Image (cartoon, rainbow, N blue to C red; front, side, top):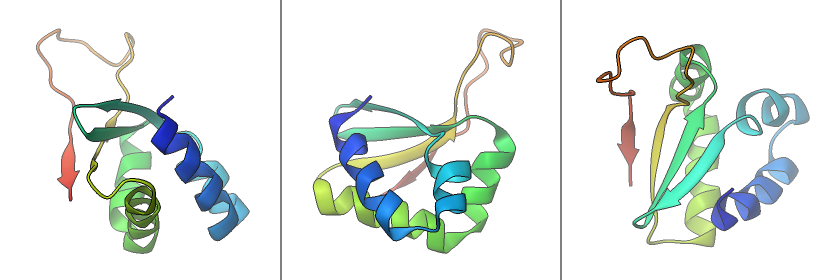
Length: 97
C-alpha cells in the first residue's frame, strides 16, 4: 500500500461517516508510481458511486493533497483475472489534479 494513501485513510476515517468510509473508501486499492496515486475501486459500481458523489470524491482528493500537493490521483477499477476477458482490455481511469 502507498504510504501517502495510508496517511490519507487515517484522515478520511476521522472526517467521513463510518459507513461511507467502510463501504466506499477503505476497499480502494492504492498504488503509487511516477508521482501518481492510483486508487482502484473493487467494481465499476463502486467507481461510479465515487464519481457521482462529488463530496466523497472531493474529500479523497483533499486528503491526498494535504499529504502530498504534487501527487496526481487517478481513479480506476481494480483488475482481477476473473474480470479481464481480453488481455488487451484497458481499465477505465480518470485523472484529477
